[in-house]
Amino acid sequence: MKRLTDELSLEGQPGAFAGSLMNSSADLVARAASGDQEAFRLIFERYSRPVISFIYDLVSDRDLAEELAQETFVRAFRSLAARRQETKLSTWLFGIAKNVARESLRARARDQRHGDLADGTVLDLSDREPVPVNQLLNKELNELIQNSLALLDEDKRMVFTLKVFQQCSYQEIADITGFSIPKLKTDLHRARTEMRRRIGPYVRVES
Amino acid sequence: MKCDDCLKLLEEYLDGETAARDAARVSAHLVTCAACAREFEALTAEQEVYARYDRDLHVSPAMWQAIAGRTAESRSIESGSRLGLAAWLGALFATPRYAFAGAAAVLLLAVVVGVMFLRARTGEQPRPESVARGDSPLVQSPVTSAPKLPPRVDGTARPVGFKSSDNVVSKARPPGSGPVFQPDKSGVLFTDAAYADIEDKETAHHVAQAESLLRSVRDLEVSDDDDEVDVSYEKAESRRLLNENVVLRRDAEMAGKFPVKKLLGELEPFLIDIANLPDKTTSTDLRVIKERVQKTEIVAALRIY
Image (cartoon, rainbow over all chains, first blue to last red):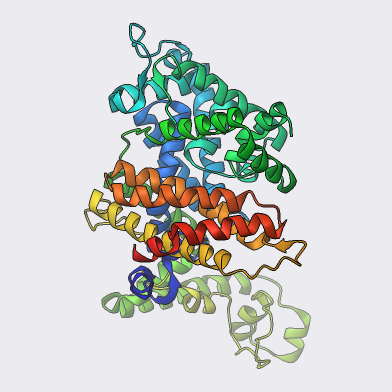
């Protein structure tokens, strides 16, 4: 592990293990808040993929997700100094991402340009019997999951993606969304049930 | 426990979020009830389906460039508004070729303003006490008109004629000394190889932590006399590692690193079991896990990684 420690040491702070890459990023946050661009870049490097994935699951639009992820990190940078120390960095970033995505969804709803999300069309596999997941092409499976996700309502979609794809704990989901634990448990259960109902006809889940 | 009660708790159990007492009851029920065990396996298999979801998203270097540009902009606006004239003067005097000319210009400006000020003051009625003391307004006026300044930190008096602008230059920071963001010009930021490297390091770190956890569980000393054993730390650590494990296992699968995926897949049931233990578990439950850890030699497998 020494080699790993050395390789991940942060510039100017040999002891500041960026193994922080795995755990808390308090050191990175402190340095980024004081203007260390490299520290902020490491934060971006660490969290950009989960953040953009989370946003994409909410807005179902690749270009928009990238744009909103940018906005998320810019807002994060501007409010780094005000961040509460006890909040986990990923939770805090997901919280900002949620706000940014929600604002965008609201604006899109106002513009009446959200036909894609409301459209219940799922991949046309209806002439098939359910097939084992291993036999389904990746593209088909991805479209199936993406379309099924898009049909969930906003709260359920958010809770589902945070739990199932981002592996957040219930408490973290509550912190990110502002939902109570009982509500998010109910939403999560219903989301799982709906997803199962939509995916089940096409994919045979084999244990 | 009845099947209905067990089924209600299965998702929470899978998520490692069941209350300690319920987790113990669900574990016990799953051992004895084939129908509920099948449900649990189906839920686990469903997770595997979701783990295959690939959004095909890429984080391009352009994205960081855009963020770096916007953050640099906001910082320069912020520091600009904070420093204002001070920064401008600081930058002026920090450049040797302009330093002399700048100093001369400021001096000339100060003289002109001073003369204009004094001329204006000579038109005013002199203060009675100044007249009585015979002070010359040429010396007195600037001092009496200067704003009150706080005493020096070291308690020494400020020099006569000290003006607030005297400390402007000393406060000003030369360009580049402050934490001003610059857009990244390094070109390439995140290649797939770079990500793969990070993932490998994350996995190595994760495996090392998991090995340490399992070893500590395996080596816990339990006697039949113990009514309960406090495993709250191991439980919390296991929950954290469980979340990481799912992500890393999925990443390994997506990257085609099947030996890594297999290893993490073998590790996961142990993490689930420990995560679902009550904070104070019975020696019997703990012994079951300890024996499984020893029997499967998962610690050795993790160490080899």
